[in-house]
Image 1 (tube, helix red, strand yellow):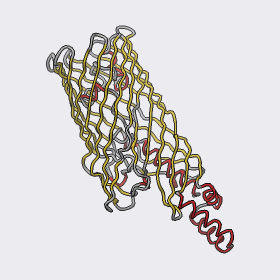
Image 2 (tube, helix red, strand yellow):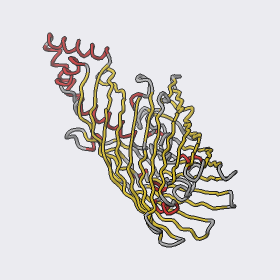
Image 3 (cartoon, helix red, strand yellow):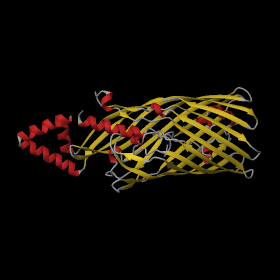
Length: 450
């Protein structure tokens, strides 16, 4: 394997690892598609009828939204991922915050047909460490942006049953940096703007056996992303000088040159790559990878306990066990030489929430949740996705200014629990653990009803 192909495989693997996902949530999947929903930990998602997120979570819930409505919202996301190594070294990947935005439009076409459009960010990642920290071989900087466009339709069969379906077009853009040690030198790789479009579908159903109880089901199918970008491979100043000095010495000493050529052949590094690095200090090449976005399903319920109090709950399953490995495209190399094992498991999300109308204009809400990480074996945890099992605590409020305007606020604390060990690689020894894995979020949104 040439040094170019080694770098392509390593950098692309790191980048797509970042695609496996939530801001400190199951893998890298984002729950945060509704400020109103965040306030109750996404209990009853898609069938509450007080915001427009049914257009994403469960299109059958569109039938609860009369007329034409528009919703805009966003969050600020702050991580506190405090790492301590066995050597005593410390690091924290919280150096960057990232906004999470969403927009919805819904319209009632008739007594039985509704349409919806969701423009959201369903997956995301943003963390940053010092480039020379001890875990840099598995990544020190990552940013992932996704934008999904999801038109959907809801059909009210009768007063008790509604159905819905939607189509998703999803765009991804990832940038990831990692550090390697090759030929005794520090090598830095950066995958720039690995982009792709993927396409999928979702369906939903809602059953209302009584006026005070609703039950919903939603399913989102899997689809494939094939990300393509460019990889910049460079050394630090010391590495460039060392490579240049070695090349100059080899040119003046035929026996040394022969030994260097033999050594590079044994490592699979071409002389042309070595000279390019010595002369310019960097190489830029193509890279790519393939990953399946997992299928997911959820069941939600809402119970109107009294005229002013509503209780709700949700259970969601995500098929992360299908994410068994990353398929890396590195020139003509067979996949068996470059694929990266992941060994993830299915994840589960459980939440309970409440909504309490304290006045005709004000509603307060809260919720708790447990989110099981897809990382069952800590040897496969990476610094870019330092995932662990999580517990949620959320609060929120709605103010209805008049019959048209609604304003929402929400805040949450997500706390990682259980095993938080970090390994240099799946086959190496433990290098440290995360003392804390916390996420703090604050969101605000508006709804306008025509």
